[in-house]
Image 1: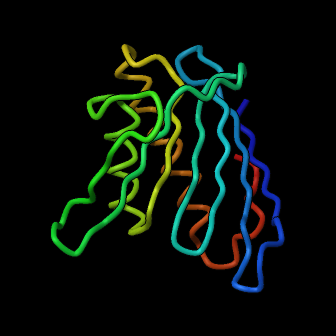
Image 2 (image 1 turned 180 degrees about the vertical axis):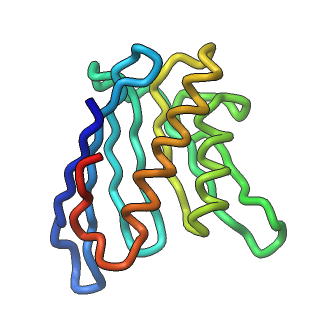
Length: 136
């Protein structure tokens, strides 16, 4: 059931905001995702088809540490899955990542599978000439 779509959204003269959506079925859970890709940052929402937005974490690299810092902005705690995933994605992408992870926190194996799926989508997005993501 995996599918991906991409849309370029005109922004200011400084660049574009690229919007990507995907959905997949992982461990019998329907996963939906939305990624807004900008020059130096990503806004990512991942959840079920219900479209719940209950938390938001941000992670970014600082000159003072090799590891990105991360903190909750909305509704979650620093030990929530979204915080750790945002930190790892920020490290891989070398960019600021805002992540709303709206999936069950108790399902650790699902978290790992979703993070791998996000990494797959983000890899497609960050490749040169990838204004349109292909279906997977």
